[in-house]
Image (cartoon, rainbow, N blue to C red):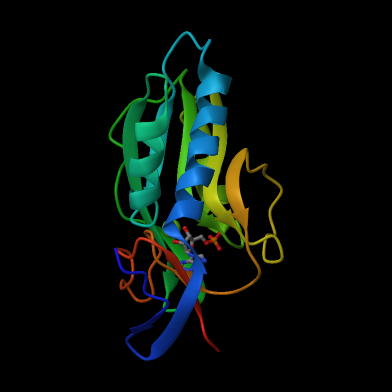
Length: 182
Ligand code: IMP
Ligand code: MG
């Protein structure tokens, strides 16, 4: 496949930051860690993917797991354009998570608001445990106290798109990660 290094979405230009190969090998490591940690669990963990951003990551990650898992998704929205906004819950979980081990999977932890909201929201349904997994974290923006149990890339405070992450809903289908050219 031809590698594209620069792309345009609406009014903004982006350049390649992380290749498909790098993403793939990091996800292989993450899947190995998660599989190892839950291999002796009596019940399969429930993976809860945060839509829409985690869609590509989620689908690649779960296929590399060597344990049984259940799958659910939740839809929230927190971004308008490139600026963080208020969190809105757009869909219900639709399953009972009481007494179960939960792994929340999101694309990126930026300020941590979304993940913090989800941890509190899901805790109220009495799961046995909650762990968090995010492909990317932006440490300089993180304002919360929770632990990110599984992560692959720490990135600077830059806006990125691709591999599920969007700019005004565009760019999610790109198979590599691109960063905004300011
Ligand atoms: P937080 O609530 O500030 O941690 O932001 C988390 C959510 O905002 C993520 O799940 C993404 O959907 C979105 N987000 C954060 N940073 C970026 C970015 O650089 N590009 C695209 N979406 C982002
Ligand atoms: Mg998101």
